[in-house]
Length: 201
Image (cartoon, rainbow, N blue to C red):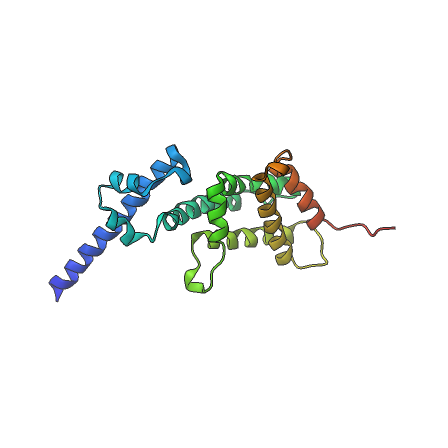
């Protein structure tokens, strides 16, 4: 029995090492070829494993990308959380800039984030969906600490902030709307959504 447990631990250790190697090689390849340009064949070649081994760890390329992109998004949120609370919308846009840049760095990345943003069950919530949840929670805390509209809940404001960020990104990929910068458009949306509005005469 002791030998069986020892063997199982050795297999588990090798499995974790192989997965870590695949992720490390993929991360390095992304630096040179981008997310969309990465090929599974290059990953398995760099990791020195068979293609079947890759698919034993990841359903497909997108599943691997979800982990790498999710880690990049998480890192940018860690950075945002570590700094001072932004006291204005321009400050908030500045603090969230690394996160937004990650989301819109490639059309492939943006599309994948949208596809992985929701889940049908709790068990299916992955790294990308988790970062989107963190984003809303973080903005909600900033809203509570700032001078923003009070007629709706901070949580709803934060959800709208994220929704307008995604809308602003999607328009950046449309030639008809590319003349306005992402951050200029985002400020217009966030001003209209977050600030108290004066009653019309």
